[in-house]
Amino acid sequence: MNKKHNTIKDYTADSIQSLEGIEHIRLRPSMYIGDVGIRGLHHLVYEVIDNSVDEALAGFCNKIWVTIHKNGFITVLDNGRGIPIDLHKKEGISALEVVMTKIGAGGKFDKNSYKVSGGLHGVGISCVNALSEKLIVTIYRNGKIYQQEYFKGKSLYPVKCLGKTNMRGTKIYYLADHSIFNSIIYHYEILANRLKELSFLNKGLSLFLKDERENVKEEYFFSKNGLKEYLSILDKNHESLTKNVLVIEGEKDNTIVEIAMQYNTSFQEKIYSYVNNINTYEGGTHLSGFRRALTRTFKKYVEGILSHKIEFTGDDFREGITAILSVRVMSPQFEGQTKTKLSNHEVGGVVDKIVGDALYSYLEEHPSDRKKIFDKIILSAKARQAAKKARELIQKKSPINSSILPGKLSDCSFNNPENCEIYLVEGDSAGGTAKQGRDRNFQAILPLRGKILNVEKAIQYKIFENEEIKNIFTSLGVSIGTEEDQKMLNIKKLRYNKIIIMTDADIDGSHISTLILTLFFRYMKPLIEKGHIYIATPPLYFIRKGNHSQYAWNDQEREVIVNQLGGRKSINIQRYKGLGEMNAEQLWETTMNPKKRTLRQVNIDDDSEADKIFSILMGDEVPPRRNFIEKNAIHAKIDV
Image (cartoon, rainbow, N blue to C red; front, side, top):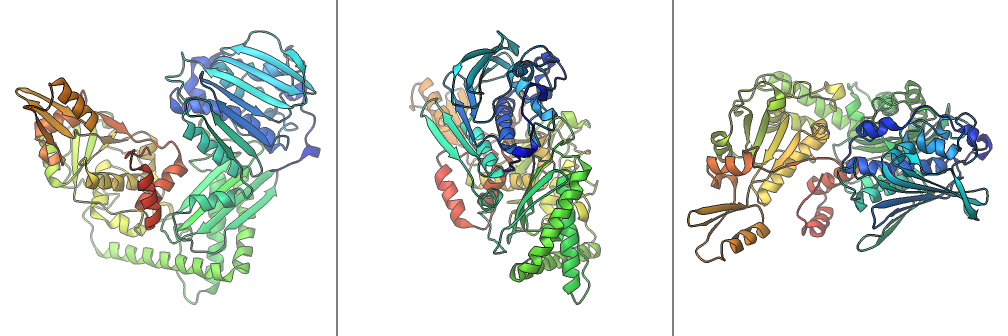
């Protein structure tokens, strides 16, 4: 943690600057927190925690306690300085009330109070207050206890002193507004994962989580080694190529850079980037600086020791790398309200310089690691070049970026993607039934032959040469970037708003479904992030008694229906082993009719957790997969 007591002035009322009023937040909550569902509800908790973490970043706090109460309230307590309570000269009210009720009010806007900070540009705590039915803030400061209560963002009384104390810090106790949020039910695992992540990003910070609801749970999160420890967890399902984890730490122009990286034997590139503890899913200038330094330094070094010339691309140097990049920036600028892409140009240069110097030293000092990395890079470059020559020799009928639709695709007649959907169906038999049962106006069918390639184990050029995978790309109308930018997916010409995976309700069907999801997660992630991917849920049973018939989607439903029909006597129960056992009318009625079907939308709640699950399920290592299946077999469901 960066402790700079001597460079931080006293944190007083004068440090708080006010910008705007609060009413707009209640009117347009999704503009500030993304949505009013599960994500938005938990985002409020993150905002309160971020305020406390900012105190830790400034060097004034080392413990944060988070409690989920039975009554729907949340408490976040820290041992920081406590928000100032003295009079704010400009506003004529206490600095505490300014912070709690004015958008953009906060010490984060005064560079003397906070060097760096997370949260929503100072909107954080006032946003939480605005979207809460009730909020009580308690301040432990200067040997006294102060308190103020709010109703839907407005104070009920001036700050009052409750007595003396030896404690210091800030306690926020609040109830999210039922009239704004769809549900006030907190998911313990979501909060636990965020606190665990924060402990790795802020080594030395103690975080406590307590759930007082049924089956009281408590957890403590603390990391002594920070990103190095985090990397070993994120990469534990891969075999390490290099012996050493490279840790890079540096500071330049008020930007603090911390990186942990290591190579493994896989073909995947996994780089997790953070700015002031915020996960920048879309990357930005800091990630560009890291990649630039890696390519430049390794290219210069490897070309200096080669006896013959090989053409390299950036992908060659990143194949098999797992890295965590965390930067602290005084005035971060992000593209979009969701804060997922850093746009400060100067940060790229700082990261480039710090990483370049550290990488060069690492290569000089670790000859064994250097040889293994360079062998892998050279192999990657040769494999890519061999694939390129093969592509040039063979006239491909349907390259990935082609506009010629595959012959297997039964397209729909509507042209507007908003109204169209495509079913990725397991096998030609089920595909034929789906073609007969569909509504041709808006439903397209793409049958897939058997199990598609496992992209988790395959080298990249093999993936893009695979016929079934090419058919998926071409049918959807999405395309990948050039060789220099394979990770960029162009979805501007996406032909269907809904992409529905429809497989048999058995082990093989689940495996095929997971293979397809792995492809989407690794190479077409924007389609998941934008909510285009769904899983169809065909029924398991067809139950008939006389002229009466019903479908059941699980064993419990089957038993309920059997009991309703007076027991098992004279009842015929058919267990569907596959989609092919249904006729076209039944498949439409149960699985394809928008008025009656059940679709499960695929979402990514936690990117690193999803990454870990795919690595376990689809990777080379058998013991972690066996452990995962044994642990989760009862639930038999994975929420990505």
